Image: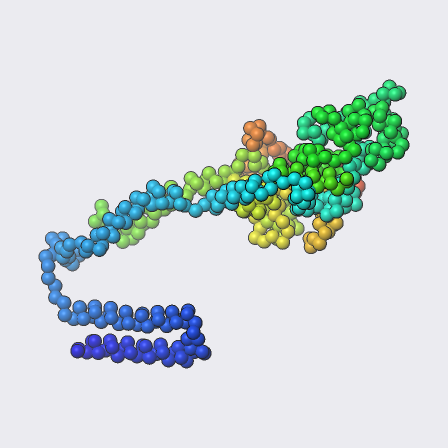
Length: 307
Length: 230
């Protein structure tokens, strides 16, 4: 055994000793922890492999002699042997070419990650789930869904109790307030509550069938109170003579003519959500990001509130 | 040629740099130029909107509110379509923000209106129970600085070719012209005309009176900016 191997073995033994000492010296040693054990195993492997490789090459430098055929070219005076390609290298080289072609035409284009792609997949999965779980719910379930949509989207103006937070938005616990009726009668309205353009004229276009004249201030006050009271009390005659022609004798509206002003209904609410609304209090934005089912649900919830 | 290069390391290095830089230009620039072009429907800020944007920056709204909707279902449900880089084409500086203490405002104009902003800026907790946003009452009395906004308009129109007084394509195929005054006086007029539309939907009598007198309180400019975020 020559000096080199002896030195290698001694060095290995020393390094392993240091490793042992530093491990047992640290608090608790290996501690039965798999990560600690792996770290020690790694350290041991590193020492042994390093010593083995270094020994091998130092030995080779000491003993090897040059043989083989030199190439004709010289590079700055340094010659080069004509060796065959190592087989492993050659196989790897051609395999990489094949893999490169696959990656260029298939691997990257087909499997590439994109944030928007992931978003689209997420959305599609969510929509499918919505379709299967919620698209056909009715009744109490629908009202429940409406309540959660309401709490997410509507409560910032209408308040968690839908009371309109002291007049900052419409109080949805009743169909309409006197102030709003008055505003609409005086100014007319075109809020697409029926889902289409169907303007209501302003006060100059509202003729009292009994007197043949345009509606008067006193009549406006009377009918506003009447509608706001849920179609009860004084003002019934004005309503019958002025409003009933379009809104119906019971105030529940007529298809394609006028919306219900006696009660909410889901279609009416859905139309408000689709088109927004402008009235006595202010302007409500449209909520087009809600899907049809969510709008229907909010409609059911709000209809339910004033029942 | 290559023998010569091998003997001159400096020029060899330059050659390598030029080759790689060229590849980078070809790969990166066209895509970048495409993505940073204004999205159809993105318009320059009008005078009052830009004034409001300055109010927004002055009050550090961007410290708590981001203007960047990320492509997650939970975000797009709440705020609308995820942001595209071309939508910031006229933002100088952009106001992406790095933290959301309050909600994102990238598209707040789609789902809040003038009267809500008025209530909210006066007393946030009155419409959002438990809100920790402070009230910004001084905005109802401070006068907005239209002149600085006009100076910015002039600058960006001249140096960055922001298309003021030009037709800008909209999503529905129509075009829209955002006007910029030819003088400060005209800019003030344009801003006041916009302010009147906003003030008509507001309830605060002092603000209405101020606008009727030809003054523009900061709140009016800020609301114009909020409504323009779509």
